[in-house]
Image (cartoon, rainbow, N blue to C red; front, side):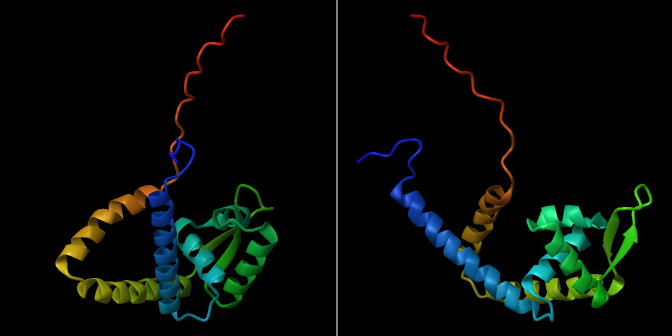
Length: 162
């Protein structure tokens, strides 16, 4: 059986399955390293607000791929914990912008440091050839996680005239 352009090869399917499993395990371990009193969803939202804020709750919902009501509940919990504040948008008072407080910034810095330290220790234990392979793979992983660029439409063959 031959594969077509639309049918992935068995090797690509096996690689995809192995990569998915390894990345999922690594993400779970790194989440566990956060050791915070927040849920993974709350931590993800706080990270987005820290990185992209101040931002409207609707934009947060879009970034996190959740509904606006869920984003509002998350922001309420983060605000109650002292990690974010809401401010009215000066251009449109109906819109609330969310930004990270100094306590939220400190929590994110602590979590990132803890995760980086854990991963650094694991990387230092790797043999040099595995570390080099992983360094090369990082470029590929960046390509995989970057949204595809829009390509111009492919020219269509002229329709046959009958």
